[in-house]
Length: 367
Image 1 (cartoon, one colour):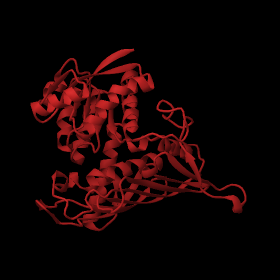
Image 2: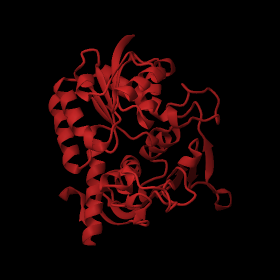
Image 3: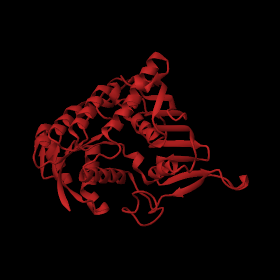
Image 4: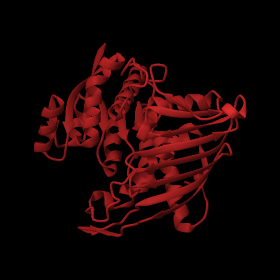
């Protein structure tokens, strides 16, 4: 068992989740590397000190370079706004420090391409944070598909829908400014990543996006409230995805349906401990979707609970990410999803936005 000093940039919503995950991952998964919360960075000395005390870090700073350059910080977790990702990651790679970066990777396609180049040139472990695909149910769905249980995939439908901006009187914030913070920049990456993980690479896309509430108390909205896309996967499957932050009544609508030549799969994150599986076997009268409750027989479930159907939650997804990151560092080899996987998501988003602007299909390889 070896200690490793962890530095986390950002102590808010995701920074807290990663701090909690690093504090508990060793006890749950018995990782060879045991994280030590070495330093946290926030926007002011006061805020950083508050996070240090709350989460148990040894030190705090308001200067990201101080954190990245500290010899005691041996691995970096970036949980700051997208426009800060590139500079932080590139300095970390120059210092041969592994980096875990929250999605989306950078604030632009240029950013993520540069981050991939820096990571691969340095040969340093890198990972991007797509936590929802790590639920035991979605990991099991990936295995079922890879094992051919539902045959060749012919169709994929996915959505990431929430309603945190469904109220037109909700005030304007940083989330309503700039396309990087809109629905295509914020919610779409998760479901596009799921589509790539479950079905495979996307060949071309056609999209449309819209601002539903163009003004809000405090300012004008300059990004998209919802968007949709059609796509064709490289394996020939058809796909359709919808993303929204104004989907009234939807709280965590990360959901997908996958149709194959031998069966089908359905999943909804609002019921994240269940997977619905249809197998085209037996007499028609007894066929139907089977609800599978996750348990110790499914990936990454047993460390949390030995009881089937008892369930895992959001924070557990982040702990699984921490386990994968530490495992990669220990092995000296990046695990999925890498920065290149994050860049592939950004390519799909860029192509979809360009498609919406030109009202034509776009090939992903052109981006």
